[in-house]
Amino acid sequence: MLLLPFYAAAQTGSEDFNPIPVAVPIINISPDARSSGMGDMGVATSPDVYSQYWNAAKYPFAKPQMGFGLSITPWLATLVKDVRINYGAFYYRFDNLQSVSTSIRYFSIGNMDIMSNEGNFITNVTPNEFSMDISYARRFGDHIGASLTARYIRSDLTGGLMSAVSGESEGISPANAFSFDMAVYYQNDHKDNSYAWGITATNLGTKVAYIKENTEKYFLPSTLHAGGQYTFNIDADNSFMLGLELSKLLVPTPPVVEDGQIVRGKNNSVGIIESWIQSFYDAPYGWKEELSEVIVGGGVEYVYRGLLATRMGYFHDSKRKGNRRYLTFGAGIKYNFIGLDVSYLYPFTTTDPLSNTLRVSLLFDFNLQYQRSNSNETRYR
Image (cartoon, rainbow, N blue to C red; front, side, top):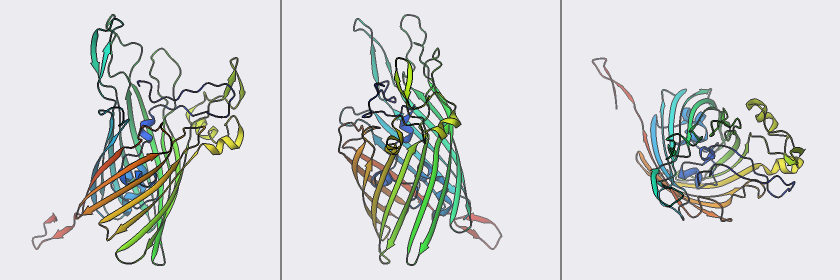
């Protein structure tokens, strides 16, 4: 369980299974129930509080001036009860052109009792992973916006575990990393309907290492996302959105190694910038495998009078890369400035840690309007 963030695969020359190992993959898990109900699609959907995770460039297009949200995502819910992802996001739009936003993610791996070889209790630890980020977004004209996000990441897989004999860390220390996101968002009208597209490059950052004496470092899950959506405004009360999103890790694919020599693929021990470029052409089995690294998510959303919403989606990951394939269902309700969304994941495989779990997210939107009184004092309403 402590090694949950890593994928293990024997390099035997098989084309069947060759996943890409990354550190802290938890930061690539969708935090909000709205997008989770649409096949984990959110780069080009309409702006909401949780755009901080998907595409912060959407915030200048948000109708509310300010908002914050809280969400809980159970992890391995069918096995344990105290492992979950807690997420909070906040944004403030200065005007119709600029916004700032921030979010905090905390992954609790639960309480673990550490026992000696003789079966005696030593201590209790709480492994966890944490990230915090801040974004600035600006709108350019009526239809397009861009954003830049800075992020700090900390992963503590041992929960501060110390050796009962020496009193020192067992060579494993918390991993720290810094990364940034870049995003673009475009929206426009088409007759009585509307459409939008978005592109993001997320978690572009430093490598991380868990073992002090080990020079081997792991890549963050840097990812390129591209998506689009079209919204049909049936009438004043009913709308229907259809969207699609493609994602790809910007991380080198492990080569096939025999007798210590690379026989297929390319050396994946490269620099950070080089790794982003190499990730597009280094699959050991050519373009067929390279294309299998593209993850597809798509979904639909029906909204009634801006109050009630129902959602459905599909998520597809190749068998040779992660084998995550599932249907998603969701619903939402919003009244005045409060909204509640839930989603459910139905897997086609038994390996997904989010199988058969409910995700819940809460949001609050506020409009702050300036009013000028006769005494020339400015106040908020």
